Length: 321
Image 1: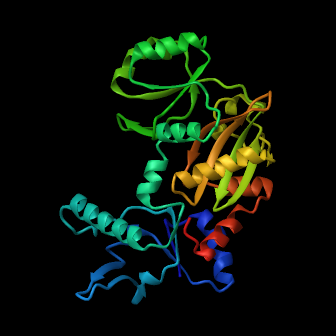
Image 2: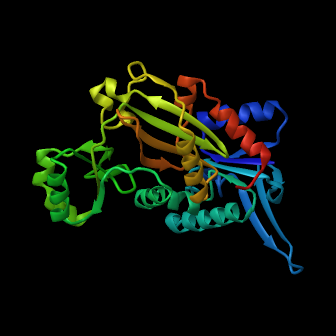
Image 3: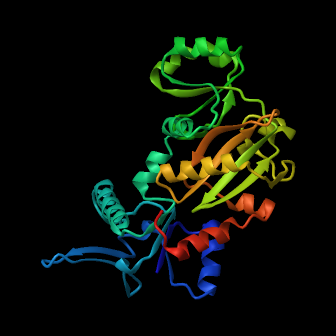
């Protein structure tokens, strides 16, 4: 049995699950947001040392110990019943129970358990591990010291960008903002003292021929080149790309870079990862970051790379990496 944890309307899950079910695979898709209102979870330890884990929904009960692969795609947290008092407490209790259950299954988990995903998503940790594996990194500073920031800015003649240490969504005064990689402006320098209140990643700007998105699925590597330099909108961060104006093509990675990508995903404890690299005008591959649960459909649709099929094959294999 393959268990897919995700929210409604997940096109990535649909792309993988539908062919598996057509081929006769036993696949269960579940959104933890429906627990506990419309679903039940149960963990039972008997006196003889045996354990069972159960899932119930719409009158059907499943033995979760029979799960051979778990895809931790994009699940939402449990939501308490509207009539329940102390909602925050109840939802936290449900979340801890559910996460404990998923983590205890002992099967292949793609991309990994929630603790593994959370650790792998920490950019400073990624950078250090990538450095140890031999990736070239941009000159980088992670700091809350305004003086260190200004010194770094001067040493690189103002050609630096900043990015968040972890999250890219923030809310202030009732408004939500997206925070992506962006060049440092003179206005930013004038407010450098605000760094005392929140850390930031500062990196020297690396010239780009193209940007590379490397998607690792198990032991398979799929690389695509994003021609981000054709537009000012994507010059610093390809996530602003216009699908009609930003060419995306399959890319041949050098074998040593491909192997480092595999090694990075494995060392992070993952079975899947989306890695961002820069290919410089003189042919160097520079590591930026890895998203442990990055989207892949946009790459697959643009290039024809069979990433979704590879995810399906990995789930069917049930191999624990």
